[in-house]
Image (tube, rainbow, N blue to C red):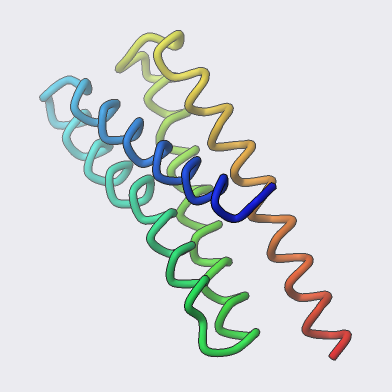
Length: 120
């Protein structure tokens, strides 16, 4: 996958997360979970962009790992929203799946980057 395609997917993921957060019920749980999801789901792409401007290979790996951590967290919050039935599963399934696909891509990127660092 080209980096530009991943950039676009991460941006689209953030936009979709924003729309989910806006659709959550306005009660205490919806607000609290929404805050957490908004932070984690929209920061993934920002951390990935930071990785692109990393100052070293170690910095690149670190920033990718932070993006991956935020992605894992956002998938958790989306799954919780689904399980708690705060929104219909049909609204969340594709986004959860996209989060898992992006998680796999970033995980592989971290492994590859670490292997390249060791090879040097």
